[in-house]
Image: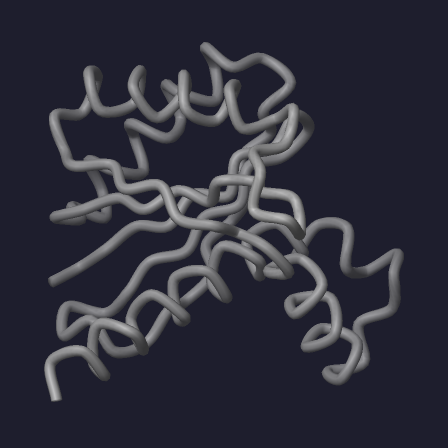
Length: 140
């Protein structure tokens, strides 16, 4: 099953997609998201190209698992996205995905300046890979 991961942000929205077997997450180009309507239109274009069967979105939670201030905005966008594309949109905790993605990029010799354009989609890929790994472990 092909899955699209969305890491919604106020400036950039990161994207990642799985392979058809649901094994490997690959980051895609991020979308500028200062204008949510334009970002949604671009995201719908990605969806029509990639043709996922499901979408997962990162839900920003605090370390005590309470929702962050951004969580309501993400939830509202998830509803809007589902209404527009007709696919299931599942919200998952995105706790530490950006930290993990930043560490991975740094290990691959991407400094902070170079990370800026990559970090959002790398975080989406971390979220998606974690989800895929859990699905695989649950089916064993």
